Image 1 (tube, rainbow, N blue to C red):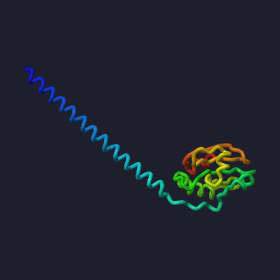
Image 2: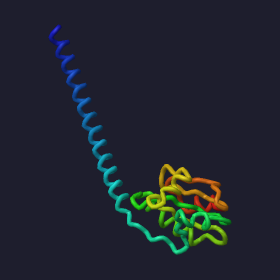
Image 3: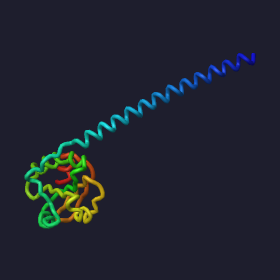
Image 4: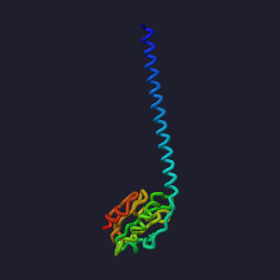
Length: 155
């Protein structure tokens, strides 16, 4: 009788070990697939082509910033060339600039060239878009946003 109970216990232990091994293999496979997808997404983001700015976008510098934002409603995009989300925002901002009428404008500040402006507005992450009314901050958006979202906040 004692031999039979031990063989049943050994069979149960072996079954549990087989189940655990299967679970580990499945979990490892899922992690590997997710890692590959993450690497592919990262590669795709890095290779987003640069889009030329619309003629209607104001190129802001430390020298013209105050003059260009005075007496206007300006959405200022703080960006950098190496920033993939910033490159994703470029077509959105181009479309927005083309649609804006009157005293509303879109401006861009390259934070690599004009770090002093990024520091002045305490920009910690990019893309950061700051809505200025007559040179004063009235709203701030961080990250990729849609044209509709931005239009809604500009009105």
